[in-house]
Image (cartoon, rainbow, N blue to C red; front, side, top):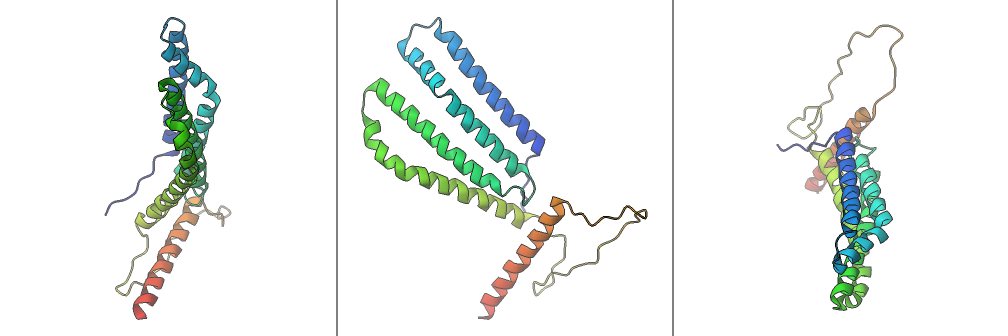
Length: 202
């Protein structure tokens, strides 16, 4: 059975920050080269990057936050797909600006013909990213190995938990998010299985 493994929270943060830093380095290097390069297209491209600098930073921050939420355990990762979907809309808007810039450089006037179609593509991109994000969460919940055995008729056998020796006064009723997520996965699996059994009986 293939198991879904999520990247650690720290690794996600560090890797995304490296990408943002590399993006900043590229923009700074392009501005430095623009001082010595006489190519008008290159200078126009650097000016385009400078004009859309804050949009790029906004996209990078939104994707960073979305990935950080996705790296959290269930149910803390539920806002992740929504944030990523919003970031995808801004990313598509940046692609439209690139398309517009290329259209202006090449003088093809294709952007004006493509612009009405973009109003249909933007909500479609949002929905696709949103659905894919929540599908990934459900897939991770489904492929998590069950801690409880299942009988032949599909009923889950709940075993009595083994209570370790805990010093008096240190017992607490607080549950971690991992425990809550595990209980929710167990409940979700039991609910889906019972629903399938009811359909088979009909």
